[in-house]
Length: 337
Image 1 (tube, rainbow, N blue to C red):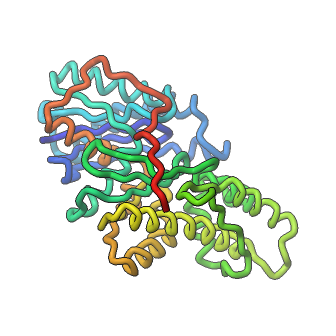
Image 2 (image 1 turned 30 degrees about the horizontal axis):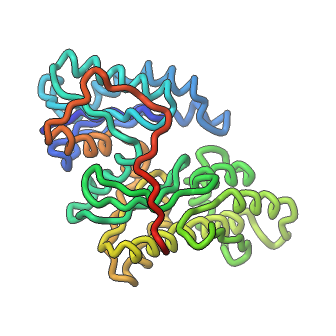
């Protein structure tokens, strides 16, 4: 089955063609980073207007790269929740118009579910059940994925997401936006032992908290010792974030008794997170799936993959499909650490 995926939940305009839920024929991402950099973050109105301009050209490019035409498309998967509501509406409206014209089924995909399914595009051996860490600028969640569509939220952030902590701390370091990749690059030149930051724990569970870490970085910069460089601070910050992400993820995997851990979201592209997560999983005999960077950040191939299993089962959300700014992936069912 050839599925056209569409992703417009935030600032990237994305379209992709995926065959049978696993084979990426094209994956086009029209970035808006240059438009938002001077504001230090995504401006919703600018993002929405740019989606309107970019979506059709991006879809055409995806079809051309895949060497298929619209008449070859057998189903459409589009992100319809959660995200910037105006941005989501742009993608959903275009997807419904195309589904009506082509007379093909359409399914809405939860953005976090698509990050889970990005792992199936990169790791052929990945099997349910597994624990998934979804870590980005807006989310830091641990999810038990039992089967397609069967997800239980194990833990989440009590305040800032990990990516948000990276971005806000990067701004304080004078690194600009987006901050995560900039911190990653600078940290390679620093010594984390020279700038130690706290690792927050939320009770005895697996929830995350990064607001205090962000504040600790700001205060540290106000009185930074002369022998501590900004690279050292970046390295210390990155270590503090990664330590908690890895520790809570492997604890969740052991508590759930799964053989696989999957990591997705923009922060999954962080080099130290990949290294430490692999080391921790190897020590415990747990297999690890982490997509390449282009599949960690927002993209439409993961949307097509997540939508494929629904389309394959004959599901069709039809023209009643709507967009929602917020919606949880699954009910909260805490798991003892």
